Amino acid sequence: MKSFACGDVVPGCEARWVCSTDDEILVQVGAHAASVHGLTDLSPELVGSVRKAIVPAS
Image 1 (cartoon, helix red, strand yellow):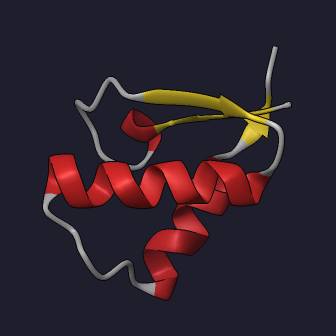
Image 2 (image 1 turned 120 degrees about the horizontal axis):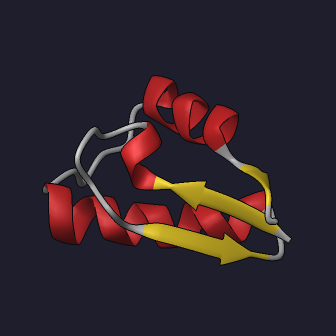
């Protein structure tokens, strides 16, 4: 299992996900970024930042 906290990339955001794979997290984060943060086009840099912040779930 993998875990990602949006606040690790966007300070102040409390959203968190635990999924089986990095790709599953990225799908959830993409939907969250659009609906909550108004980001409809995720730059490669942002995706890279998200990937770096994904950690094994504890």
